[in-house]
Amino acid sequence: MTRVVWLTDLHLNFLKAAGIEAFLRRVAEARPDVLLIGGDIGEAPDVAGRLRHIGERFACPIFFVLGNHDYYFGSIRRVRAEVEELCREQPNLTFLTTAGVCELAPGVGLVGHDGWADARLGDYERSLVMMNDYRLIEELAGVGKRERWPLLREMGDAAAAHVERRLPEALDRYDRVFLLTHVPPLREACWHQGQISNDEWLPHFTCLAVGQTLLKIMRDHPERRLTVLCGHTHSSGQTNPLPNLMILTGGAEYGHPRVQQVFEL
Ligand SMILES: [Fe+2]
Ligand SMILES: [Fe+2]
Image 1 (spheres, protein in one colour):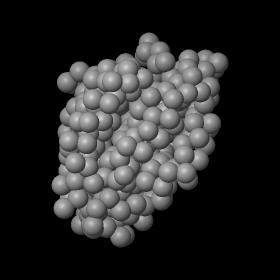
Image 2 (cartoon, helix red, strand yellow):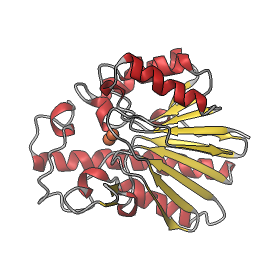
Image 3 (tube, helix red, strand yellow):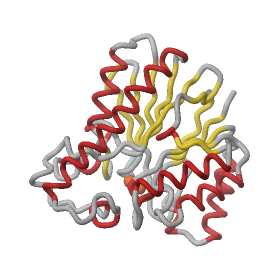
């Protein structure tokens, strides 16, 4: 039996050292054999250091993706390069966004990608939501709303391309696969404050490119089972868009990181 402990949207930058220690003790009490961290761990200047700290604290394999907040006050390109370097130094850490198929437990595969809200669902043109992403991440700041639109779609497409390549590889090798991502891939998974998000928020809260890729691949593999773990909207929920596809969205509250769920595989 492998105990897989899922964490997401930790936002550790909202805590002091003692609060982080108390949280890590709670994680240890969950007795993880494997840790999954679904992004929004900190911000660009500190995320690598926080991952290093968690990697030193827990000897078990730690698989993670990054969320939009992990790139705040920095650039996506630089943060990704920094955490890739960290993973080379600390072999129990794996950044799924740039990794291949991993084994989560005997007979269970794992793939993952940050994902990115790709402004395809809802009404991007009319939405008045101004995410901090569009001010605080180098690649997205300094461009207007209209010019940002194709950038968001490109980032969603890059996530989908990774899934399109890695998920079938995983399904060839494993009957059951988990996919870890930050952004909910479909409207039905986009819980926000206990309800499905509206057209105002959906563009910023879903990665439809990944969602459509998941549906297509899982329809082609009816004998295989996929569990998707996502976060980002800080409101928990579950949806089963296909008989062999379950999507769990993690809840979160700034300043109160929690153990999301423990899977015994
Ligand atoms: Fe978050
Ligand atoms: Fe997020």
